[in-house]
Amino acid sequence: MKVSIITALRNEAATIETTIKSVTSQSHADIDYIVIDGKSTDGSAEIIARHAAADPRIRVVSEEDNGVYQAINRGISLAEGDVVGTLHGNDRFSDTTVVEKVAACFEENPDIDVVFGDVHFEDKNGRTIRRYSSADFTPRQLLIGIAPPHPSLYVRRSVFDRFGPYKEDYLIGADFDMFVRLLYINGVKYRRLDLDMVAMSVGGLSTQFYHRIFTNNREKYRALRENSVKVCPFSLLKRYLYNFKRK
Image (tube, rainbow, N blue to C red; front, side, top):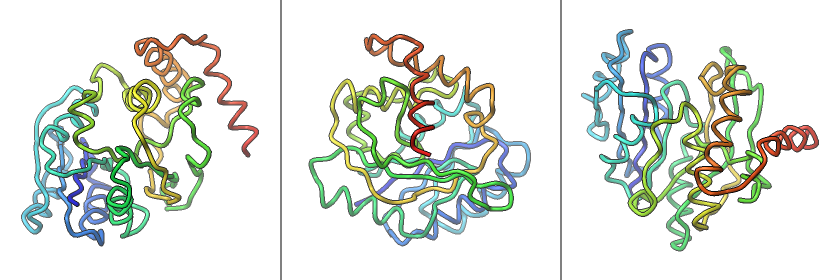
């Protein structure tokens, strides 16, 4: 099974080599790796080009974009894999067997279209500071703003043909909208892997305080309403109580 991995980035020279190596070192041989560079100016492009010259599995697109979701959609439109996932330019796979285990899950379960797992956050020194688990996720949790970690999401490419790409006019919430459309509205069959799949770096938009609190809640509420899910905006606050009880 061929798996397409999309890395969307702009100006990630400090970390992009680690990201690329974590893909090219995966034990799964049949990988289609698409790097979408939003015209980086910090040396990222040169690092990417060096690795692409050495590994024919890497395809590079360097174009201006209007945000990460437009970049991911470009990657999806180019994807040749049966399954598509993402790995951002400042993240890495937790170990070398992640893609192999994802592919095996799809192969062993031909009736499922979505696979996800767990991730963790690391500080600049590589120390784990927080874990993000999907262990007890159910689609109804989307009604209070709880979704599986997007960096662990893998989707059959045919699903995007059926239900559409990411909405590009969201700042950080199009991944939540995708979960709502696939898992809650359309009941796409999924399987959770009991696996820590990605080491995420702190500092991205979704981890910044303002966006984590305000933009995050505003866009999740918008995603639910745009999908005709009637919820009170204050219902999204329930997830803070839920997360507190889990600790």
